[in-house]
Image 1 (tube, rainbow, N blue to C red):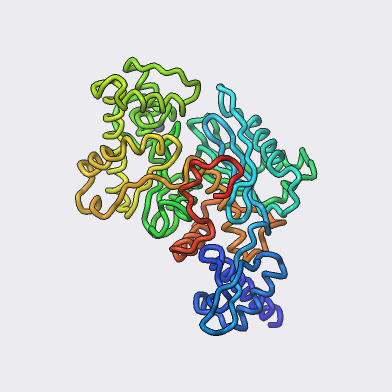
Image 2: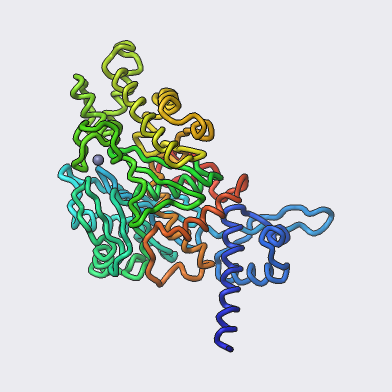
Length: 458
Ligand SMILES: [Zn+2]
């Protein structure tokens, strides 16, 4: 009886901390007086919880506002320096590791190129460990957790943590979570990343989806599809506020839906996948077959040359222009499938290639999507560009430990083992918080992110 009572009091205390932290994170800075009606907590509870969170250094004062004739009211916000978060993007050509403060302002970054022969598992694990060491060197604040976005299906249902099935990069049931923990143990550098650091692994398109839903073009939507177009193609389907997972977390593999029966060979081994037409790697293959040529050594540069050529250097009849028009139709048809299947209110085109191609392709993509989709659901949806820039995968990966930090009221962010991302509850809670935060956001305007150099605040 006494034990039950104790637990209930403790649960209530944690719930109140979570409520206040989340409100201040997404809508702060706010005064104690504003927090009461916004959280439904009594002024006594607010006073207790806020006092506790300040003592724990999770909240700090952020100036004052005048109140009608009374004393000025102190504003409170979540302290950006109360902890650190790391987001990792295992990309097609490099591993990117970024260190963030609690408001997801980037503090440090490491870009570690992958060799041309690809994603050797041990090498990727070593690069992640090296990147973590580099960005956290000399860091004294607590590391609340590490989120990792990978190009593959992440299954966390087994006993050994997250396992990655990355068919297009040759990963067959790779136990990435246990490998990363073993690497941390082995290196034992005394840095903040240890084998006890909460670790979250999720599909890269899904971490991108989280970031756009929390802070970008998906904000406020309950049914949306966030697409990632890079070398490959993926998607994160948000159904009624939470990512749709399917029976083993692989739902949303939009890139491997068939666009043309018997069509081009895809990296997954099948024929005619959407990715085999609109993924950057495939698009450049198609350009080469059409007689195209480029000087850049990387895909980003090559795609930029394709766009420049189509923009009129050689006139509108050029192969480049025709190729892009055809690609817009393919992409529009793929998006029409999403419209017909999921009835989303918003479709966001993201990923580095999506953002690069978007301004040129989007009008034609909308026309094609309208032609291929059913009229009624198409009329309910909008097709927009992502707003977080090409780094959204790392930002989204960092939201995995951030969600846990908020969910546990700032008490359970360290010292435990993380769960792999993608659990509906975590994301659902985060989305609910993000949704209510229209207007006053701790993270200001994320659209700047794409163009800002390393190390500057978003
Ligand atoms: Zn495929």
